[in-house]
Structures are given as C-alpha cells and as structure tokens.
Image (tube, rainbow, N blue to C red; front, top):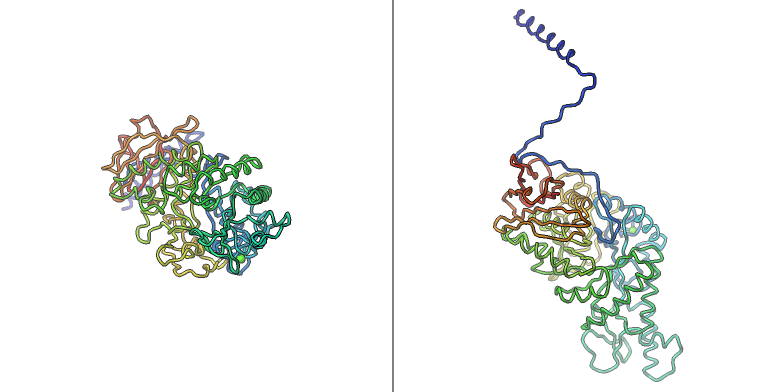
Length: 547
Ligand code: CA
C-alpha cells in the first residue's frame, strides 16, 4: 500500500514538473471542441446585436389603454401606465405602438369621441400624453394613435349644433354663418323612408346615419367644414409629436362607394404628409378582397391592414398554413407574395388578431400558436401584435360573447398596475400565466415572442426584402425562401410540421452560414443543428435564418 502511494506521489511530481516546464509565456486558451448534441452541432448565434432601420417598417404593439397598466390606483389603465411599461414593450422587441382611442368619449372603448382635442379623464391629461410621446421617442418607439373620424359621439357638441342648425334650416329659418357651417356636418336624411343604417334624431323629424350604433352619428364627409375639422385634428396631434395615425373604419366614410373613400383618403394622406413627411398612416378597411385593398392603397396611405391573412378570414394563411401536417405551407408562400403585391408601392400591414376579433392563441396547442406568431413576424411590412398575445391571452367576441372579452386586462402578476376588466366582460381567463411568470420561464410564450422579434430586428431583409422561392416540398412541410433587400440576401427555412424533423442541405443554394434560429423549445433538446455533412436538422415548427 505504502509503495503504491509512493509511486503515485512520484508520478504526480513528475507531471507537475513537466507541466511547469512546458508552460508558454503567453498562454492561449484552447479552442473548445464544437459540442454535439441530439440535433447535431449547435449554431453560433448573436443574441445581442440588432439592426433596426429608422423607417416605417416597424413591429407595432396595439394597446387598449384601459386594460393595460393602472398608474393611479383606480383600476383603469391610463397613459402614465403605458409610459411606465415602455421598457417592457421595447424589451419585447416592438418599436411602434398603436394606441386605441384616448380622446374624451362616452363608452369604455372610446370609439365615440366627445372631444377630439381632450384626453379622456380616465386615461389622464394632455400633459401625460405629451410625456408618453417624449418617452416613446427616447426609446426609438414610434407612437401612432387611433383617428376615429367616420363618426363621433352623439354627445359631441358638433352633433348637437348640427342637429339644431339642420332643424332650423328645414323649417325655413335663415341661418347664421356658424349654423351654415354645421347644418350638414353630419349625414342626415329628411325623407320618410330612411336607408338602412339611419336612425331618427330623437324628438325631430329627420334621420342621421349611424352604421355602428345609435350613439355614433356619422359625419358628412362631403362637407368642406367637416374636412377642415379633420385636418385641424390631424395637425393638432402631429404638432403634439405623434408619428402617425391608425384610421378607423375607412370604408364607412362613404359606405358602398370605395372610390369616394379613396378620394378622401388621398386628401388625408396629403394633409398628414404635408405636416410631417415621415409620418405613418395605416387604415382599417375591413375587406378580404385583394382587389379592394389594392384600390385603397392607391390613395397613397402607407398601409392597410391585411385582413385576408388574419383570424377574421376562416381561411387566413397565417393560421391555416400549418394545417395538413404542414403541407399547406404553400399557402404561406402564396401569402408572402400576395401580402407584398396588394400593397403595391405601400407598406404591407399583416396581423393575426386585434380588438375586434377573437384572440388567436389556442387554449390547447401552445406550440401551434407560437409558430403562427413566428409566421406573422417573418412577413414583409409593418406587423401588428395585440397586447396580451405575448402571454397567450385567449378570448372570443363571437356568438354571444361581447367585445369586452377580447379587451380584458393583461395579467402582470403583480399588484401594481392591475386593471379591472371592462364592464360587460363575461369571460376572463388566463391559461398561460402572468407576465412575471412568463418572463422567468425561458420556454414561455413571452420569451418565444422576444426571440422571434429579435430575429426580425436583426435582419431588415425580413420586413423589406424581395421574396424568391428557393425550395418548397409540401410533402415534407418544407419551405425555403430568399429575401433580398439593399443588396443583402438572407434565406428563411421553415419546417411547418408539428412532429417530424426536417433535414435541409442549404449550402447547395449558395448560403454558407446559419445566423439565427426560431425553435419552440429553447432548452437544448430541440435546436437547429448542423450535421456532419453540413446540412441542417430542423426540429418541428422551427425556422432557420441563413446567409
Ligand atoms: Ca388609472
């Protein structure tokens, strides 16, 4: 035993002496051997650098302010609350915000504006709004606001004046200049058989147009005084520093007459761009027809929401292209092309859901919902994401379910900021947990969103590039496209299958390097791996970015 110990001690001394003897003056750390795991060698990813271009191709985050973050303890979200969460929004990877209406209004949703020049007192003050704009700009976030000018509230003073002036004119009294201005400010009907969409003015002998509801009378957009008012409102907010507008209900400006709507939109675009050539405007024209949306783009307005791709179309490709074991991937490819084509020289505006539609996150299959979000964010244009989708909020406003169900508070998981659901909400559930919980879980929906948006922010080609097909194999749920922007080219390789891996030899198409990956499971088990022959192995529902 002693002898063995002596031999071991001797050997140790010899080894130590040898090591000291060979020690170089300037030691260089050894190159680590590439680590091979179940999917092959890991790729090298840069997870910190972004390449954000200061143009109007942005990742927008849509906020219903009342359900976002309450800063003053009355359980109603407010503008100061949004300011407080700007770092959260920025960290997610959004660089644009669309605020749903913030002006003084009659209803919880605030699409019935009582005063276009005042902030609703539930949301705060004009000073709070100015602070929000400034804080957005400090963080490189563009702020656009909902501009609801198809209709106002019936409590808007302009409506009251208009009704009185119209009545006076009908009975043949002479009008003052002020009354002349207001007598046809709204769309009135004086006959006995009003067209559909009209209601009787209470206590009067004439009707007013109100396609959405009785408390939302519609402006007469032919009136020069109305148009002057619109321009005033636009100038007022551009002068405050907003970066643009989301135009509500544009096809209702002249319902049934798209050409006249487009004519007014051209005017609006001119007013906005004259005041601020960099401003961005996106219109809500709820139509599934490419042809009609293209017609609207001819107004010069930057963007119109792509409803065809969204959840409001039962066949919308952003959700349905993963069906049939991923063989429907060709629908996504067609969508990539049509999304660009519809917009012409404008900016596409794809989205999956918003405050008027059911939320898209599945109650059962979270992987499916994650991948669908990634499909949205690989589209060209400015994308729009509804607040709360990042934590997988669910909700539907179809059937007997009211709109309030898709406007419930985001669950921060902390006492601060907590909002109460809008009155009338019937279902309030959160199947995937709070923001606090999801921030702490690397495999959460929230952290998946962050990764997807990081990839989008690292590769400007995704939002802006010209799309070319490299390879498509429907049977194996494989789609490989190229996007080229400003002389730079990236490849996007999608595995649309929920269960099977996909092997892709990407180097044969001239790409040499994998620069990013989007995978469902961010632990080390199912990553995009490099094989011994240089090809890639993509796990289910994954996307590789190659250069
Ligand atoms: Ca509040």
